[in-house]
Image 1 (cartoon, helix red, strand yellow):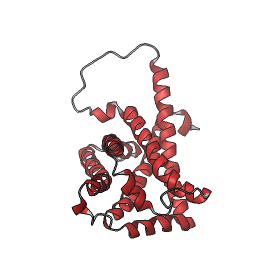
Image 2: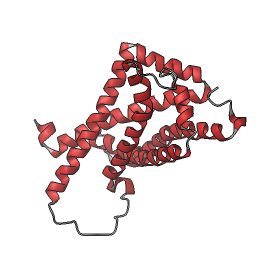
Image 3: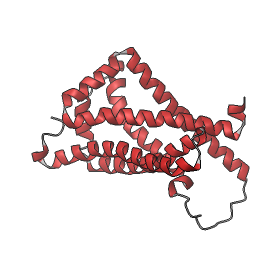
Image 4: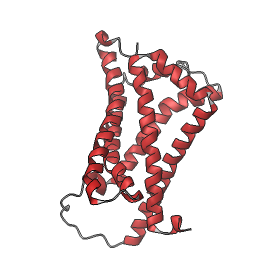
Length: 230
């Protein structure tokens, strides 16, 4: 099958699955921002997603596309290393116009995955999985806002999330326009426009996540900000 056996096919799958990642992050950010304004509203959204089959299915599809993206990124990296062999590439100065992110997409991806595993261990495991498995914790599994407030009051956790979100921003800035370019939106007129749109999109999405992380951390150290997540 050419999608699996050709480099173009594999890049196409990477690009399409990357769009799933973009949509998943946009959805997840929009949901998390609700917690800044209302703990009850955020918990209502979480409850809706966990109790409606179509919401669960939609989330699973987006997460599945994200997983495919990770698997293909790993596979393509291994194939590229095999093709290169043991002979390293000649070291050269970075060509003009070549971004840091484009040369370090897999390294950034590893940081993104590490942050994702941290996030899943803190939120998904103690919320959705705990509720399904009947595991009892100090915090009610249905009180997602309480988990946000608890974790983002810890400086070490906040720093880890800032590093993760920084890597994710770089990954998105390059990955979004590159995916559109691979799919076929690759004329010279739109190339710079797509790069600009990708940077704006990545900044809005990651900015939303940062607002939640920093907002709840500031709330934990500044009592006057108690209105956050009220």
